[in-house]
Image 1 (tube, rainbow, N blue to C red):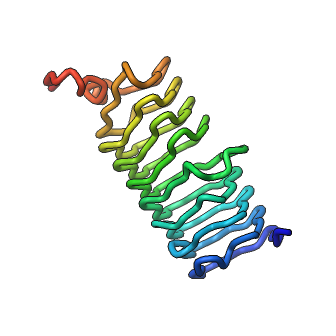
Image 2 (tube, one colour):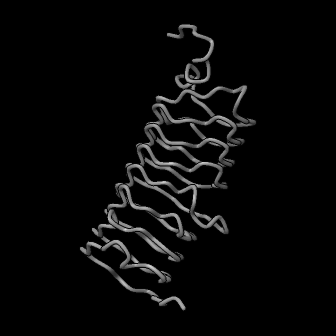
Length: 189
């Protein structure tokens, strides 16, 4: 049976490989915590906030994220694709998610604000109504994704092939249109 933790504050903790396993956290806040060595097994975070935490290279294959907010977190090379897909709801603000993977997840309504998303794998991901606000999407991959009604207006450095990504009613700025034309090898100035 999982250990249940409700409405607690965790500050300045460096977690070991299996220290948070078989635990459920609800309405908890983690600040300046380091999860980079963790290999998560049977962990749930519900209505939790992570502030200035490090998840880089953590193995989060068996984690449930339900209404979780990440603020100023470092999450380089994290594979979210194996997380619990039931009610996967996350939001990112001022984070670094470079080289992370969201392959084939349902992320409808997710928000990415002021976040670095360099070389992130969004292949086959449902990005319907996702907000990419002021995000760097350099070399991120969107093939076979559904990005209907997604908002890319203030983001930059993306290259999305509209013939391989569903973009119905997605929003782009005039400046960002060249990111939709990359495959045609034309020059837009």
